[in-house]
Image (tube, rainbow, N blue to C red; front, side, top):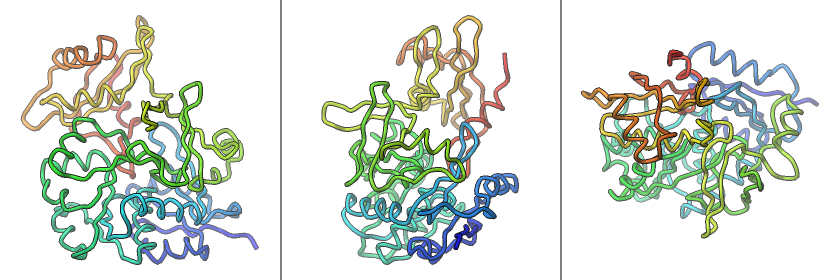
Amino acid sequence: MARHLTLVPAAELTQADVRAALDGDRPLAVLPAGPAAAVDAARAVLRPDEPLEDGADLVVVTSGSTGSGRGVLLSADAIRASATATLARLGGPGSWLLALPVSAIAGLQVLARSELAGRAAVVLAKGEPLAAAVARLPAGERRYTSMVPTQLRRFLDAEPDALRSFDAILVGGAATDPAVLDRARGSGVRVVTTYGMTETAGGCVYDGVPLDGVRARVTDGGDIELGGPVLASGYRLDPEGTAAAFAGGWFRTRDAGRIEADGRLSVLGRLDDVVISGGVNVAPAAVEAVLREHPDVADAVVLGRPDPEWGQRVVAAVVPTAGRVPQPTELRRWVGERLGPPSAPRQVHLLDAVPTLHTGKPDRRAVAALIPEV
């Protein structure tokens, strides 16, 4: 008999729903909270009227930050393998604070890890102080949470004591600025950087070291590939896309990376995101990190635009620090001195805030639409 997906709105998802999916009883997909257009787009990807592919127990729609979202087919075994390896790496079961959307793999994994630990996740309500949510976690147990880098920065400014109460804070979904990591760790916050994606059932490389059972390699072309029991089986109703990304037990991430002398994996950014300006490769993530170190900049997103002289030019959208007005010439000087002239933004646009996807990641397509052509 054909199996079909059960679609659950994010606001209605319970840990029992996740338990049923992990037990193989009811295949699950979570619809994002937010505008009707986002929900309709997810439905279009998930196509619940079509029979579900064999071996899939959970389908997660990717964020689509630079293109159309996809439905990633995950087995209960892959979710369990990831959750079990995470708990082993962090030091054993504990109580989890859910601070991320459950329509994304990072939020779903908080519920899965809680389920395997035999505990109920505590939910951080929208606008709630972190300390108030922490106070609801059981006393005398290990405490964990997952965040995106923007949340870490904000809580470092507002509630560092609450952050210090966790035994581990997993930070992923985007590159975390080294300055923020140094600041957090220097103040006693136990941050663990994670690398992974929906196709690997979430983060699978912690602080550069793959979780138990996970394999990581870098091809001659500099592309990171990941393997192991955490891998998805493919994409929903997309055999061509599946064949292009998954082959021989490996997933081609399209991220650039290298294996360091100590064996750790370093992630350099998206292969597709590299801006080639005047024949020089510029990594947007590196420029963003340097911009955020400037006292006038609270946040930044960097991308490339066609340029008749340079091939591409580096463009930056920045959110000013409260009470400050960043000057483009100063920001160009700041970046150029630290990364070299080709990395200096040739166009700077001010934003009130960076648009985000339902996962909490920057919505780069929305940012690009806000930057006028010159």
